[in-house]
Length: 284
Image (cartoon, rainbow, N blue to C red):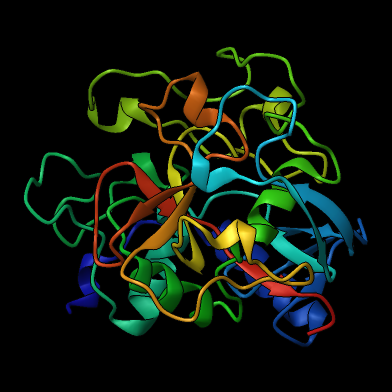
């Protein structure tokens, strides 16, 4: 891949800032002034999710939710970190430039993408990366010294120890909470920069856990997994034909924006409504 295609993306001040962070830290991850956040190799802030029990799945009192989202069950998770924002095109560019990994392209329709061939327009730097399959997401997280979150980690990061329906509580979503309910793809205008919905962030400070893009998680999909899942640090089935997607995309309606919504997708699928974020064990 010709690296000359990847120029004029980051300003000198941004690069200087990244260098300073790494210089001060002396290692891949540097603590910020807030001890509940860290900064990774990819310069992405990560928020702390403390150990403890949380209720996973559809609340028993709810009348909606799929069979594969039941039963509601208590899960204990060790402390971990999760990206505060969905991985952006700007950060994905760093990964592509350093590794030569393929660029994020729609497999059949180039109009359903944000990159122009091998070039990433500056206007999409802060939009979530799309058109990445599970293996692309996994490769990025490993490059950044992280990993994809488990399905349980993703859900706890979205709602904390609460039996909420949405990351902000049980109040029905509005356009102040998330980017959703769009009918058709309109290019760049379809997505919004990560982290702009202050009212929609989770109890731990993670943004866009509903709306904008669906997110890959580590687990294989099993419609019956909740009935047999371990109650401590579950990691999903050992094998499968589909991976789990969480959150909800820009075209999702209110039912899809619920925290407990889970859908399946083939790991090689790439589309214009799916992205990801990464996680990391605490203390590593």
